[in-house]
Length: 169
Image (cartoon, rainbow, N blue to C red):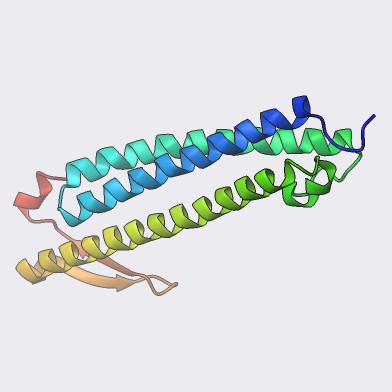
């Protein structure tokens, strides 16, 4: 047996990493679209895009699981620790393929960070929008709303929704 993985062993892994990078790009684009819809005050589109994001995240989870399973299998074939990261397994690959694998790994990690940042921005934008909406409703009918605080310090609103608002809920 060779000291390094053969092409038939590492080529499917390269394909999985490329697909993962591509799909993270798609997820990032969905998050960008959602952010534009938030800024343009398009709640129906935000909700539709949110459904697309959730479906895409399920796909991303499946891709990640496939890649992790492939890496585990490859590690077991080399009698390595199956929980070992792909980056630590790079010496097991031929010299000429290591830079490409390292670049793909780095790109996946960068895309994960980038999409998490964008998702966090959207979450904060939506949270702030909800706070402003609640405050506007409270100001329009102050007798109908009471602010409460949870044990963790979170602010909540209780009270009767105005008739015109109930139609939208």
